[in-house]
Amino acid sequence: MTTEYSGGGDPKRSMELLWGVPDRPRRGPKPKLTVDQIVQAAIAIADREGLAGLSMRRVADELDVTAMSLYTYVPGKAELVDVMLDTVHARTAEPDDDRGDWRSRLERLARESYDRYRRHPWLLQVASGVPVLGPNLLARYDRELAAVDGLGLTEIEMDLLVNLVADYVHGAVRGAVETARMRQRTGMTVEQWWQSYEPLLAQVFDPERYPVAARVGSVAGAEYQAPADPARSFEFGLHRVLDGIEAFIQSRAGA
Amino acid sequence: MTTEYSGGGDPKRSMELLWGVPDRPRRGPKPKLTVDQIVQAAIAIADREGLAGLSMRRVADELDVTAMSLYTYVPGKAELVDVMLDTVHARTAEPDDDRGDWRSRLERLARESYDRYRRHPWLLQVASGVPVLGPNLLARYDRELAAVDGLGLTEIEMDLLVNLVADYVHGAVRGAVETARMRQRTGMTVEQWWQSYEPLLAQVFDPERYPVAARVGSVAGAEYQAPADPARSFEFGLHRVLDGIEAFIQSRAGA
DNA sequence: CAGCCATCGCGTACGCTGTAAGGAGTTCGA
DNA sequence: TCGAACTCCTTACAGCGTACGCGATGGCTG
Image (cartoon, rainbow over all chains, first blue to last red):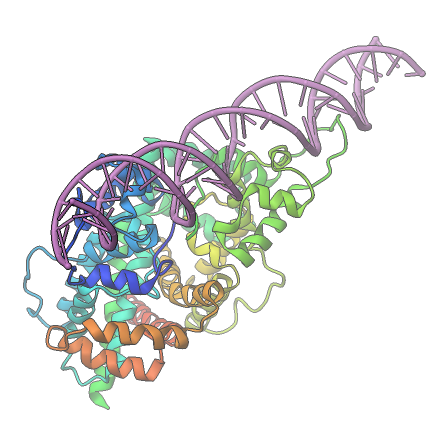
């Protein structure tokens, strides 16, 4: 169990943090920390222990200060998460975004997003529907749009397509992340968990009441050794989504 | 900001609550409450105030008992959420699940799911990747599978298709839910929020650095009067997903 | 019909959370 | 040199889930 944020704070203060204000000459004692140190520490904690494990005191401990000291650098936890969100969207290298056709470009971006969620599972809990846009989030949006630019689509259609892929990836990565989280918390693999859970289910399961689920569930349970196979789901679904987009682009080209 | 659960508790106790144990003759004082009353009160609170507003004390207040009394009926909060999850998947009527072709069946189920998320936004925070299956969740899985049964697909393919739709709906409904949540918390509509946020963004936004985003963003911002239009995104994406599934089913029929 | 004891409901307590308020010490600009 | 600005701290509050243990209740057994 974990906590969800973003947009909770003051957007103005978040934007200042994200884009950097030209800092006026400082008068008092030298700051012991930087905002970036705090953000990096917070990201490390959230990666390891989830958003539920992220607390101001925990971050402060890591940096050998008290919790309240952090409020000198950051207005509050919500704004800190806003900056964390933008920060993990930074890119180390600027690779081959333009290579290939639109389909391979979109697929590459979808996998990049999937991998980011896997690396930073807490991203799933950060509300990004009404995001506070930092430089890296904007850069990502720009890259995604560029992947479907020049195909004769309207701007709105480009936006909708990019949203579709982002929405699907978000939905699909949940299974994998929750599986990993369960393993971390309980020390059990999904297979082990399934082996102890399946008998419980069998006790109450009535095949006549759920005929299709009975048939499909038993085949899937045997094949996955678990109730689901998130990685396989993602692969399968991604191709279907891209097929759907392909049909749309072809129909627009014909119009 | 809210809290995420499910699977956190003891699966065995959750299963007992979900499927009902034949209760042995009770000896002590008459119970003041039933599990169902507690679950209904908890759902009402979560609907109104989000999962963050759901606390044992809050539920107890609503029912005129103390927090600790609830632990007579429910092992803990995690198991309570498990039961809440299954309960909101109950159906009032048994309508026309079989009507139409697979596409209209799947679309109807997707919209039903979308509406449920809108009615119970906290569902988005409940981890369902490793769900504790109750009768209603199983019934839903059965219905979804039945929608793609008899098309010549393998069981695994049926499972993957059903997952794909569920994942997409989950991803897509987030935008709408977060928009509604923002309005509830801040009292602002998205349009109002956008009017105050857009100038902040314009101050730091460099069109040369984000050329495609600049073009698309300005068109979309003007058209939506917001950074996005979640309802429209869902409609658009759902049709693309179904198109992708259609392509798959046709290719399988040909094989 | 008495008495046992399972069960219900409650009061208290612990360690955790985000952060408001205010005080002490440090360093720069005037 | 001295006030203003700034950093960092201690203290405190209201909230959380829930472990523990205590009285009161009331159906089953003798």
